[in-house]
Amino acid sequence: MNRKDFLKKSILGSILIGAAGSTTAKVASKPETTPVGFNHLPHTNSKVMTNSVLHKANSRGGANHGWLNAKHTFSFANYYNPDRMNFGVLRVLNDDTIAGGTGFGTHPHDNMEIITIPLEGALRHKDSLGNTAVIENGEIQVMSAGTGVFHSEHNDKQKEETKLLQIWVYPNKRNVEPRYDQIKISDNAEHNAFQQVLSPDPNDAGVWIHQDAWFHLGTFDANQKTTYNLKLKGNGVYVFIIKGGAKVNEQELETRDGYGIWDIDSFEITTTENDTQILLMEVPMQLNS
Image (tube, rainbow, N blue to C red; front, side, top):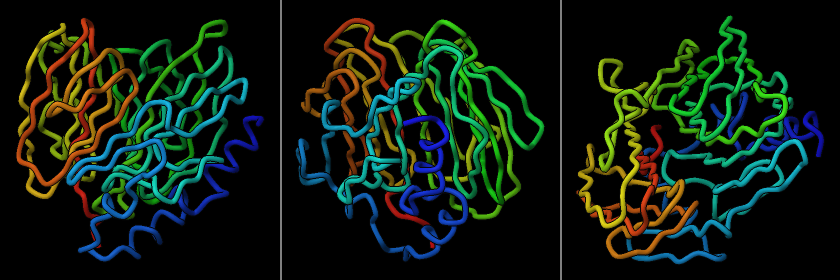
C-alpha cells in the first residue's frame, strides 16, 4: 500500500480509529460506566485471565508496505479485530519501522493525545501549529490534537530506518487548544529503575497529556525485581516489552509482548534478560462521558 492510500485508510477510512471528527463522536457515545478495556479482550492468539490479558508479539496485526513495516497491537488501518480495539483509554499502540527518506504525508487528527517514542533513528515532524522538529531516540513527543491539527512525519535519515512507537490515548477533555511538546528523557534515566516520562500534570516529570495517565520507561539488567504502585484507583497498566524479557506477577513476557492488568493496586516485575527495556502505560479503564 502506498503512503497516500495508507493515510486515507488509517486516518479517514475507519471510524474505529477515532481520528478527525469521528473521535469526538466515539468518546461522546461511551457512557461513563462502560469499562472499555473489558469490552475488547482478545481471543485469538491471546490468553485472557481474570484481571489481565496477554497479547503475544506474533498475534499483532499489521503489514509491510515497503516504505512502512507496521505492527498494530490494536485495530488500525487494514487490521481490524473487534476484540482488539483498546485497553481502557489506550486506543493505539503501533510499532513502526519507516524506510529511509519516506514517511507519512500531511494528515489530520482531532481529540486524541498522540505520543511518539523513537527507538532508533530520527523522525522529522511538521504541523499546522508552526512546529518543525526532529525527534530522536532518547526523546518523547506529545501532541494534543484537540480541536484539530494537521501534521506530517518523515524519516529524517535518507538511507537508514527509523523505528518508533506511536501511541494514541483518548483524552478526558475534548476540543482543547491543540498543543505540541517534545523533551529529552535520556539525561535523567537511571539504570535498573523506571523513569516517569508522561503524566497528567504539566509540572510533573516528563510530558503531560489531557488524561489521568502515567507512562514509565526503564532499562534493566537480568534478575532485577521492581514493584509498580498504581497512581489512581480504577486505572489499569499495559506493560510492553520493547526488548528483552520479564515476568509480571509470574506471567512470562518476551520482546514486543504486551500484557494488560487491572483491578490491582500494585504488581511485581522481574526481568529475565540483560538490557531489558520496558514501557509501562497506566491508563483509566473507563472513557469519560
